[in-house]
Length: 114
Image (tube, rainbow, N blue to C red):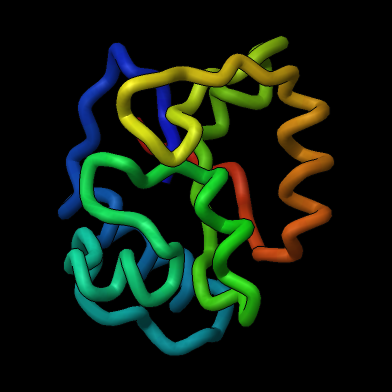
C-alpha cells in the first residue's frame, strides 16, 4: 500500500471499505487486512521489515502481491520510494513507475485511502 507520507492510514476503516466494495461487486468478502509478517515479506518480496517498497515486486515472480495506491498519487508528477533499503530514496516519474508496474506484472489499483 502506497500513500503520501503526510497522511496516516486507518487500516480497519480501509478493511471495511474493501470488504464492502467486494460484496458490492458480487465477490466474496476478504479476510482481515493486516500488515504482512516478516516471514511473508521475505517469502514474497525478498525484503525485511523497514525495507519494503513497491520495487520489491520485482522479486514476486509468481505475482502474489496486489498493490494498492492512494488515488491522490495519480495527480503526482513524481513519486518517491525507498529502493528496498530504507537508507535511500528514489524519485521516479509516475508514468515511469506505472511502466515498471506493467513490467513486473503484479496487479495494482488506485483507491481512495482517506
